[in-house]
Amino acid sequence: MPEPLIYLVEDDPEIRTLVRALLAREGMTCETADGAVAFRDLMGRRRPDLVILDIMLPGEDGLSICRRLQAGDDPIPVLIASARGEPMDRVIGLEIGADDYLAKPFEPRELVARVRALLRRRVRQEGPATARLVSFSGWRLDLGTRALTSPAQETVELTTGEFDLLSVFINRPRQVLSRDAIMDILKGRQAEAFDRSIDIQVSRLRRKLGDDPRAPVVIRTVRNGGYLFTPAVEAGS
Image (tube, rainbow, N blue to C red; front, side, top):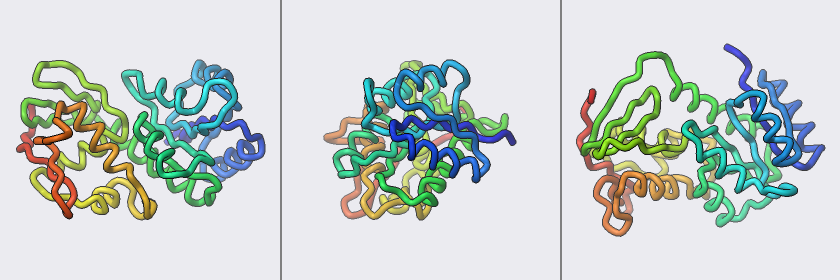
């Protein structure tokens, strides 16, 4: 397997040096940029497997860069690593499409664990040529290409996090899943004690499925229980 290619966008030269060396020891190639301009140059050369992104950058900030990365047909996984570690900062980062959020200062082992988890998810999505189609309530999802098609035959783009969450629900239809259970499936024991990412991703996924957030039908909230994916899931088109 080729070494994963990671782009680190960080204006602190010491952090750039430390993270690049850390990931190199773990068998990954890490190229760095000190801001948006240098990052655009990197993106023009080769598409990375993952982007580690600071928020507070000179010129265009990290949130704006993250929005651009998630706006394409094939979003690139993004791990935000920022000194802005307040709960609301995490919420905003996840709302705009980041797949994970790590507050600085972080433990090197935790950064590596988060990176590896996102890379594993990416490999599973791209996977071997054994893609299968599933359908629910008129929707169709190709689990190999991550293509979601609406009942009106329109393509709906999903971020990495949204696709992962939908896959969890599709594999466990009509089961009440607690937030902790979903978090454990997606992130294992790397999840933090305070993690709003599941609630945020559910909200985003509901919007894309046309599920009224005031009275959701597809993904119901079960009080003191978690979430319930209500449609029947069928294999094939």
